[in-house]
Length: 234
Image (cartoon, rainbow, N blue to C red; front, top):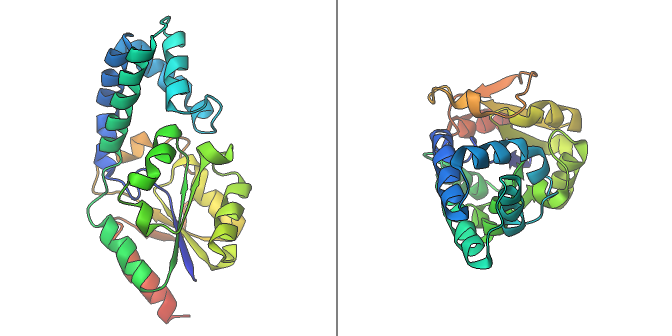
């Protein structure tokens, strides 16, 4: 096995940080000048559109959300809302404890590292400035690709760009978006990060996976032992 492809939210990020998302939405709503609950409802309802790029970038998305809330923000208000929204998104993508060390360890072991994330525009736009960017060889964002997990084309794209056959890739994620079943069907070896130490984290998963992988770990740093054992066993 020569490559490891990671999910992003709840896998590389702190699962507890998801609890910050409603507050960040409220901050963006205030900057847009729309009711917080109406904005939150619009964001939740538009998730399937936002993660495949159907609403454009963050600025275009927030303009669309404002329209759905009955508002027409001017350029200055929209500028403030975009800045506020990006700042909130940065807090939500705080790395989980030990995640960066795991990535550094795997790179030192010559694993190719990929990312496969169902995400809206915020992550893709900010990616080059994140602490993850220099550690991931190939990031694949649903927003840029125009499709979401478990679409087999996403897994094929990730493997192709890594230059590694799908059969030689691990896929590591917390189980949202039916991602493990997608990885299994693509020929990858899936690993579930249960996040057992984060009460309530499973409730934030969108379209949770009903397929339960053979390989399961509670914390991300257990991946090092799992991969090391698998490699030792050939």
